[in-house]
Length: 203
Image (tube, rainbow, N blue to C red; front, side, top):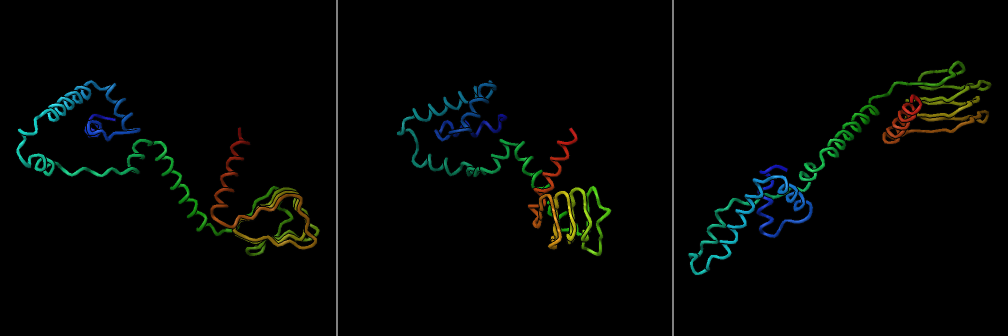
């Protein structure tokens, strides 16, 4: 807090309206700033003089005229005050919103068929469909993005299908788990888990 921020809080303090975190912030500032401590003493003296002034000596309507001449009190925006008090959290929130926006745009724009796996020699691709023919075996995990997966053979691993579908014949056998990611938030969660796994494996 700087001196310009402390001054209006001093007035609130003298009016008995300063509470909570603002009162604590003003107290911390006054402990560190001799100039503001002196200013508060002067304001307290002025307040004491005004209160001690005999009411008979005050011209009629003077108080009302003074109050009307004062500038209107600025409304405090609690959201802006929170942002000023928590800059790191605010930056993190903005970063998260930007990242989510970029992820959503990637989700909408990415329509190219992508096939990943450690053993793709038995996989057949026709158009937007990936086939594992009957009698063939894929040794390892298989990921298909933006396409269909038709499994007639065996897959010794996990299957992940992103923005697509899985069709399994009665002859199909899958030893791992099948994960289908159909929505943007599910895709975002899947990607974050994938990155976390990659980072943990690289250490």
